[in-house]
Amino acid sequence: MSIHKILVADSSEKMLTSIQSIVRKYNLNYEFIYTPDGRNACKIAAQINPDIIILNPDLNHFNGYRALKILKRLPQTRDIPTILISSSKNIKEAYYTGADDFVNISFTELELLFRIKFALSLSDNLKKLKQQNHLLQKQSEEVKRQYRLMESQRKDIIDDITYSRHIQNAIMPTKESLSLLFRECFVFNKPKRIVSGDFFWISFKEDKAIVAVADCTGHGISGAFLTIAGTAFLNEIINFCKADPSEILNQLRTRIMRLLNQKGLEGEASDGMDISLCVFDFDHNKLSYAGANNAVYLVRKNGTLEILNPDRMPIGIHENFTRSFGNQEKNIEKGDMIYMFSDGYADQFGGPGDQKFRYKRFQNLCVELHDKPMNQQYERFERTMDEWIGHRDQIDDMLIIGLRI
Image 1 (cartoon, helix red, strand yellow):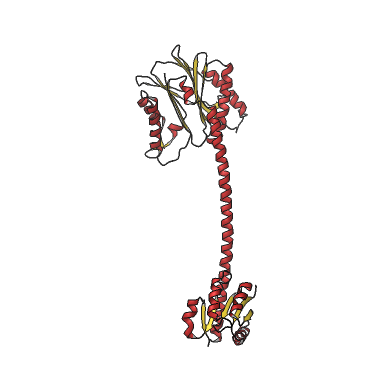
Image 2 (cartoon, helix red, strand yellow; image 1 turned 90 degrees about the vertical axis):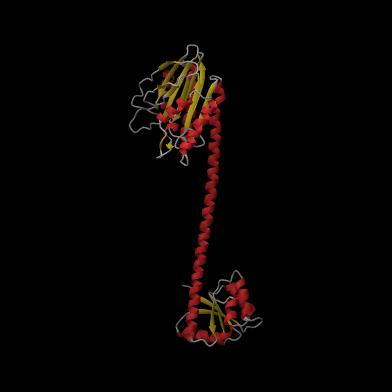
């Protein structure tokens, strides 16, 4: 434990001798520094930073009050506890000037000893507080540094993801390209995050329009990887495969399983996608459909809803992955409305009781809107979901394609 330093400033050494005598009497070990000069007292205090200062107003060059004012202004000395020893008539001036304690010139041994020990205790506590504040300041600076680093990394990640969104948008068809096949259509695409795990794909072969809507495992980056793979595989498949929905899905499943190294082993990841794929033969007014867990709604121009149900297996590993997908055919007429979608809209929580929107409510909305213009349908789907979600978070990507025959 270090020895406490006490600076004594008095015009004569009599007070120093008296204090030292009292300290020795009680077997206390303090280091004393003495000066008769007020100006010098300020210099010494700034240099050695004593634990406490004992001042007598009667000093050379300038008195103790002036020295005390300077000590309380200097950053190095302003927190050092200071005891002023003087006559009782100067108590008010002593405290006004900044003294931490006052002792009458006719002090008793125990009184002075108590004041010194109290001042030294105050000094020790102040030093501990300074050390703690310094440590807290360093910790605060480190936290701020780490926060700045995290913000920089977060910005880099968001910038990368945002750029990935541009790539995804470039790969995915636009509403304008869809309009070349269907004069009346809309695309409601609302990713949960910046990039989406939902995508749609279009093609034209054998004088037939082909449209697919897919929902990949996960959302955000994980789902976006599969959307790019799915789009690339569909573009490859359509080059050699006829416009047959089930065959296209069979070929897509084979490629996705090969990409994800899925062999049907126990504990294997079951990543993949759900998809609905429609082939439109406008010359013969036929719609051919195949689906992997994704249904399609056909709303007749009279408002009748017909549901094209999918095979209950995904594009990916499944207990029935060797079984072929099946085709369904429907006659279509001008004015019929086709809705292709992922499960994000129906599965969104919200509304009274924080429940899912559910497919029944979604079906009713499709029937209600089927004869409305495309822009009104889009706006209604968007407004309905915004009101349903309210203050809650969106839980999944949402994609709805509306096509009028």
